[in-house]
Length: 358
Length: 194
Image (cartoon, rainbow over all chains, first blue to last red; front, side, top):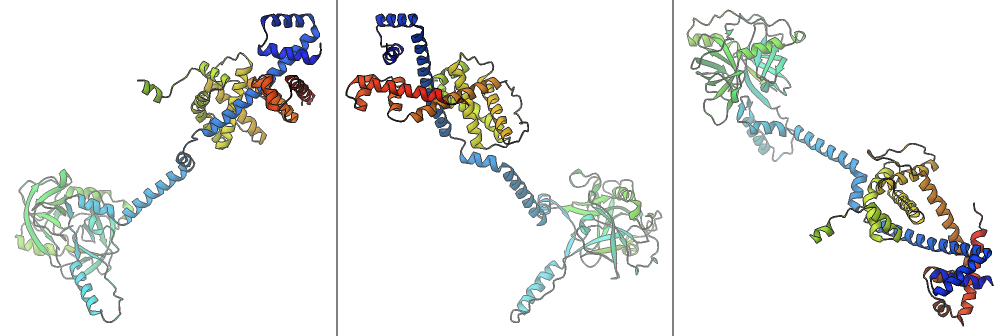
């Protein structure tokens, strides 16, 4: 039998086109002839390989087609994956820079100020006057082109008083924060340059020292003492401060033993105070310092706050040794107690200074 | 309820998936892609690969699986996704080694790595064998290629082939087919098995 005919039969056998009788004949043929059987087997295997190859190719195409068709993550997702780090970094920079901008433009401090109804009592000296002057100048110079108009640095005024006769004074931290230079001016109009020894922003206290050589140590002993024990509600008190360029006397009583929103380091006092009174001493009827005026509550009449002397002493004790120029020894001999109020004030005035901050 | 069923991604049994692969079911391929590709992509892109390379590797891994499924009575010893991940890892390591970057890969945590060396080797052998068949087929040229494919793969009768190619009778066509087959066999077996 020729090979071609046999393979023809084999193909028919494999595709199942044979009748049962033919199948029997074909199988018999294969069984009888080893050679033909081997030929059949190799043929069958080859055809099988061919078929599988084709199916495999088809599957491969199908697979690559399917994978290609898959919405392989939208472009946004892909970009996000790639740029995630950059985006995070950019966001961080953005947040940082906006915070820095807000901080540098003083947004947070304004925020704090506007959010609280507590108002610190430093006064912006010449604010109105300077605005008006600037206005005048502008009008005056409207025709000539001169525009150079050196502005005075903004100036704050407040009150401070001597702690010791060798030049230590105290005022509020909010008065001196951000200060370029600080000057203390007494009631005779003499001005001394002062330097900051220590600040306690928590308690709103600043300890100053007059570094001016013209401040002679000739000043007599401090006439008042510092009263550490707390005083009773309703006790009469008075203060002297510089809400304007002259010393102003104010009188009232202790109205509460805690300060703004329950602050135990301060008193609430009922004394008329105004911007500029900050840092002023609060004295009892015997001329003992019981506190330092620091602020008042907005929209509430007669609610001013004074930092307790105890808090001042605590702050003084906390000053590191090396920043001191000689120990602070507080006076403990009161020479005011026997005097009438007007005499007390006369004596006091020499020790209460207007703090000018540039 | 039936609508919800359609929307929710069905979780399919591995056995069902293998069956689908054997028959070339498109939905099975996409299902496997959707469930297994992300971890593979993560592995490869996390190890100095690109998106395209990840896809290539994944495709080859599916082919490894396909070869196993179509040639043997294949039983998965692990989960299908684990198997594919292991194969991809093996393939990618090979590729990295080729680039002389014989550094270890960083695996996603909690993936057990199955031993797939033999499976990969099997696939490579098959790939080789089929490449031989492919090149034999392409060397065969027309019309032989089409005649053989029509007859053996598309199961067309000799009469149809006879008509399609314009032979005067089926005997001529049969002779032609026989000659073509003999040539193909010769081409196939004569190739150097290198």
